[in-house]
Length: 276
Ligand code: ZN
Image (cartoon, rainbow, N blue to C red):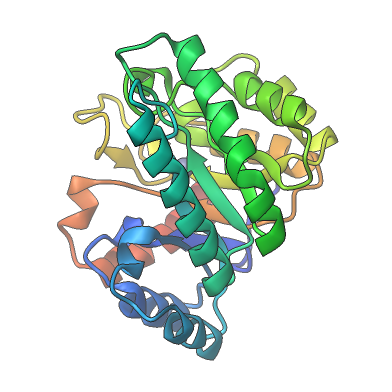
């Protein structure tokens, strides 16, 4: 079990957690609240001058933990697989431009083909973009998704599968992202966290909670402490690997998106100290 967190030095918030805020609002509000880690979702970069974005980040002493998200490699159609590669190359450029050291990959799946086939295409896609990631100094992190998304969002559903792929490709620029929402149920989790730590493949740690009951399998994530995930236990395993990155609050929630976002940010800070 991890020691209680006493300050916000490792707290990072995903921009999509505060969906109604644009990038500038996220930066200004996080910074004013004493939060200096940010993971940027690409929707808030649309139509923006990336140099200016980087300047605003620097002016507010914000550290970018990652960019979300690349991936979505598999498709039964060649043209869509090619489009995905182009989009991932753009995401790598965007990551470098805003100073994101890691691009998180939601790897994708196509329900019209087998999971094995989708996984082959994911591996193929990663191998295609890896040289550009390396050249740009951006690391790629495979984020396993809960099996309920295996039909359309990701054919990689356990940390073991992500570790397998990262180890097979074996590059300093490829690792894994751990999201407690997707992995909390897995009885191999401790073992697999140790494994990715040992291989220096642990690149990001995402936190939120699993509501019981869950009303919507995309947009009903809980705030830490709302649900049934033992986050301090998992954080303890993560810390034992020597991981020294941010603890990233990533919550998609119709409930919390509907409230005042500054009040919500204060709730996040409280939950971070008490239930993370
Ligand atoms: Zn995540």
